[in-house]
Amino acid sequence: MKPAERLLAHFDAIGGSEAAFRTVSPPGAMPALHVAIYRDAPEPGAITGFSFGLSLVHPVDGPPDVHRELMVAMLDDDESWALAAGFVAYELREQCSFVCGDTINFREQISPRSAMNSFLVTHPLLLPPNAREVDIGVRRVRLVQFIPLYEEERIRLADRAAQAPFLRAFSPRELMNPFRASYRP
Image (cartoon, rainbow, N blue to C red; front, top):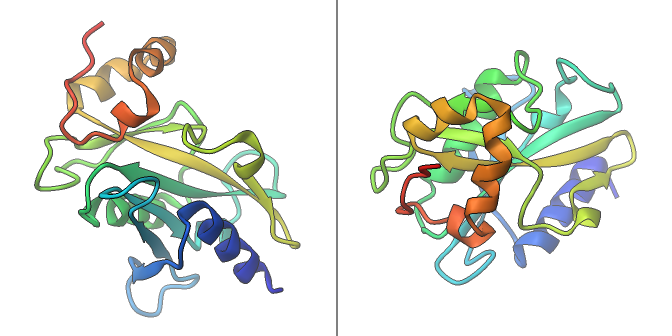
């Protein structure tokens, strides 16, 4: 099995089906960046998306044999969540190492249905530890999860000490709600 097939098989196992693919990089970009989108995952009415192609770029920081792909899961069927994560992966792939604890300002609403406009990078809250990293033969690929945030949350969570209380305040399912109340410590 080729490395890309191994990674897709891992995503399919998590998503519970085959993905729909959307290209987020411009034509001719090398390597191209796509988003693998799974509907009704992790539950009916939800959407889960994975960047596909970020791990082909050498990480800015960190061990050269561990590359990253991004995931986002929301209780919404709007593909904007997955497309935004893919766009961020493409735009920042040579500048950002997507380390847990990073906050990323998307600078506009991620979805027209929600006022959220930022992301927090975390360990995948929805995956067991053994599914958070996959060996695709030529490298290991570590998954990190994007948690969508409101602007006021992004500002607060730029202080990494505020992140643990934030993550304890919500269940993983609540963090997937595009209409959840803003965190107020």
